[in-house]
Length: 172
Image (cartoon, rainbow, N blue to C red; front, side, top):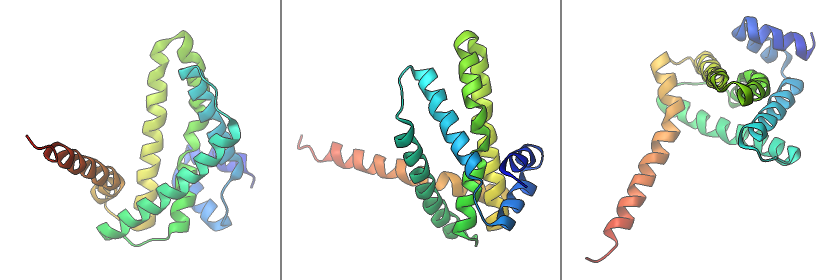
């Protein structure tokens, strides 16, 4: 089964597509490349500036590694048990809907209402991410959403503490 068939299976039945990728023990590189290129082109269309494709692709993969590590620590902290390799694979597969980012960005230049499609694409990515992490780490839905939002909460709290330290460091 090639990557296009896996892409179709991810659209029709995401968990079956993920389990097939687990069985094959490899990332569908075609899907990862196509989603990162589509995201890069889509952002170029929306914000009217150009990305260097190789830099964007390397940052995209680096972001996936970083996100996998942070989410793995977060899921383990909350009480789940799973595999970080499967998490990395599932996070890269969950970005599959970003393939549709460029067409919606092009249509959005003519019809601003189609930017709702871009919001739906990111919502689709988030739902896939929740489903996959829930499946890998055997967490409930509430714990999965908490595990996904946990790094953001920690980051915002540390910014708040840093801000308070900055404010109170002045001698009035």
